[in-house]
Length: 220
Image (cartoon, rainbow, N blue to C red):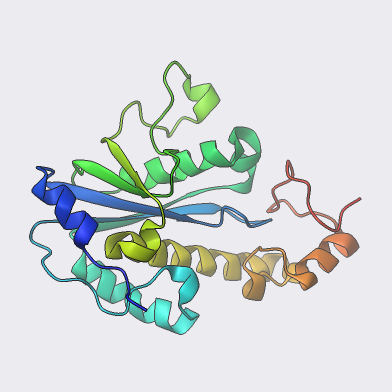
């Protein structure tokens, strides 16, 4: 199977954008823990693709961890942002994704000219005529223009790299949270709806790290 490459990114850079921020999220469908957004910035100086990078879901934990220093060396800049379960409950999953993405964006040392976003829906751009109370105080009033690309995590190596950074960082957070809430098996399921996680919800109820506004399986 042909892996992701730089074709899309090179096209955007040739169109006049001096740099681009590749963006992908992890944790959207999890029952517990944060939603996380990774950003990898590249420009025309990045001439070669990065071997071995795939969508983070297609890689083993060991491979993902080994790729992190390579991605950080390869990229011009990078960051990961997070939004908490409470923020998911307050702002909805789309609003929380936006919060996490903007928190990653402000960590960058330079502002990218364009955002390349995995998927078909632009959740990164803040909606017009919405207050900080509605969106969260960390949402920026404006961001670079956003270009969406369906399955970008499988075709664009920069987006795949962003997904790896976000996945590794979020997984580490879930392992740490599992030591505080050991009943749910987050060190293995990372907050997703595994049979053991659902059984623990039925036995112990939801923790403060669960997305309580969701209809959680195992709870009546």
